Length: 81
Image 1 (cartoon, rainbow, N blue to C red):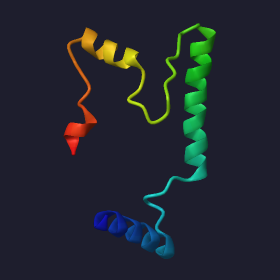
Image 2 (cartoon, rainbow, N blue to C red):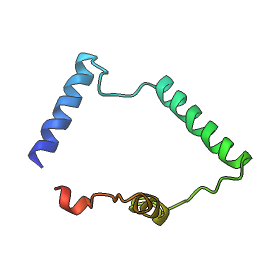
Image 3 (spheres, rainbow, N blue to C red):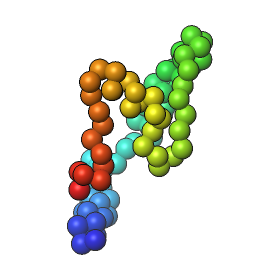
Image 4 (cartoon, one colour):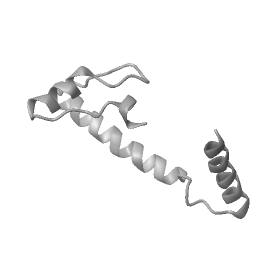
């Protein structure tokens, strides 16, 4: 918890100093969504299936299957700590 407090203290200090290095500007957010929207539109036009999954989950099972097909796998998050 102490590291988290230090991180937030640094972010707040950056805000006070006017340093926006660690923050995303709105024009960047809009540009990013424009890219995502064009990908989604292209998938719809070409009838490419999009795998939806529950927020906070490990993602769709098809992601695992794609990696396994090529001899790879995701690293389990539990073992990364």
